[in-house]
Image 1 (cartoon, rainbow, N blue to C red):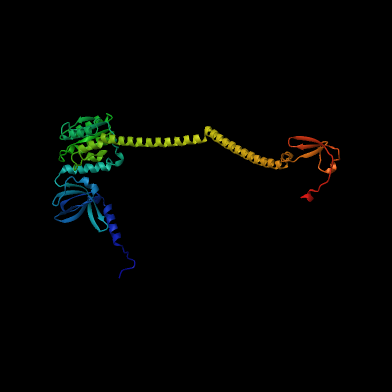
Image 2: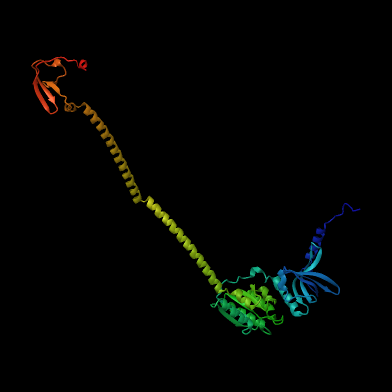
Amino acid sequence: MRNKNQNVYTVGQVNSYIKNIFDQDYMLRRIYVSGEVSNCKYHPSGHIYFSLKDAEGTISCVMFAGSRRGLAFPMRDGDNVIVGGSISVYERDGKYQIYAKEITKEGAGLLYEKYLALKAELEEMGMFAPEYKQPIPAYVKKIGVVTAPTGAAVQDIKNIALRRNPFVQIILYPALVQGEGAADSIVEGIRRLDVLNLDVLIVGRGGGSIEDLWAFNEEKVARAVFSCHTPVISAVGHETDTTIIDFVADLRAPTPSAAAELAVADVRAVLNTLENYKSRMNHAMANQTQRARSRLLQYETKWKYLGPENKIRDQRARHAELERRYTDAMEEKLKEARHRLALYIQAMKGLSPLDKLNQGYSYVEKEGKAITSVQDVKEGDLLEICVSDGKITARAEKTSVVSWMEQS
């Protein structure tokens, strides 16, 4: 039975422990292994899975897509290669494998070993660090080129640069790019052009073997690129070629043609961008103008409504309305007064003595006083009889009392 004091670990803990042992081994962190490629598979993600084998054993390998720059040829089963990278454990499967960073065909010789050694040394010194990379200006006016004066590289750079921007100035330093003295010539070209206050510097040449490109793997050239105050674009060989200055330069271009495209902005694209900006600005200004006109029209309407002229006009209208209402009221009052007067006149007519006189009646006065009873008159009294058109003087001869009610 298991002793209760014994520790029990999970599979994941064991795999993690073994991985930690591998990762702490200095030799396994940077190792080069030679062997024959087998079961090589290029995954759609860009990763390459393969095995290295020899007469004594097999080891699994993987090169991730981000490390593909370290492979300068299409790898196939049966190739004898040297794989540089680190060995670690894939915890999920509990398998150890080589994580490849660089792969070269075996037999490249001492030059490739020298290349790998110098690359490791310069990387250890920090010369590849991103914080030392200078940005490439977006719009350059003057370009320096360090390359051979003849050949396809310089022609490609000139043709593409001038096609993208006919106004760019290209200054060429005719350097040796191959053979004895090539490294010194390249260094001299970098130093000469660096003092000319250029916007960017392109250093490179066309493709070739590792021997042809070796000048760009020299330490003196790498240090000259690193010390250059002008931003440097490396443009050595074809896309699969990799040299030391590619890691030191501020930007690596896969080919000289690509270097020209990276360095020089396409003036047509710039003009199109400016035209788009102009169109957008005009549209924005038109919108602003329209909004300003609308606000001005609103202010004008408010001014007309709130201005003194409008107020005076409103006051005049109100006064005219009041005048009309007062006039109508007065006319109504006069109409009512006339109506009442007509009624009074009509009523007075019924009471008027003249109206009675005109109907054949008369009244009698004695000494200016109206006679209302026979008692007021004696025989012989002088009387005045008033009719509608005058007076008649008469003398009373006889008086008698008559009862009008009895007669009726």
